Image (cartoon, rainbow, N blue to C red; front, side):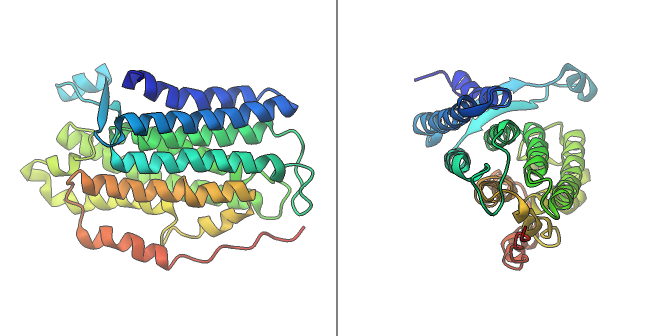
Length: 304
């Protein structure tokens, strides 16, 4: 079995390399590269989960000297981890990513009568595989800082893919709406993690529980900032309107957004915080599934 550092590197390198290659190679070769990269990503995730998923593994990657000097001690900013929760979400994102890319071979192209697209799918493959890369990095991040970096990468990927049918009525507006709402939530998440880093000198998911006594009055406020990022990403009230609008995207993209990426990322962050014994206010955390139940129904794709 590979060293965990190598395994995590392959998990990200395979779809990332596929994104770059499929983004420049035309025709059937590019299509084959995209599908093989997605299959390789799924295979890498299965190997990781089988080897480390149940017993857990963490690979620390250190921090930044500038941050260490500012706080006066080493701070772990980057690293990878895998446990049962991360394993479940990782398998969902990579296996469903492979299925969505495979289905895209017949769906995204000139043969689709309802929403025909160009036979040149290089941009589509690039963004889909980059999306898979971002989700793999997000769910295996060992710190809030690294999670945030991949978090924002998913925002950019969703913007590009929702607006893929750029001539479709409402596609560009839906992409901009998704970007603004999820990026706005990302700003709240960023504010929360920066405050936690300054107050606790920790970027771990348990940073809320490490607040000094003098700052514990801010626990609820900081928890809400983190949860606003999760709510916006997963399309919960009052940030729910971008998600039905995103149905204007190609159906494989919509399926990936709903089943394996954006929605799951928000729920994953809440679960990760709770399982790390962070004192998230129970009424706020419990409101997440209730808000999801009241989200707006999917919008229909306008007729061409």
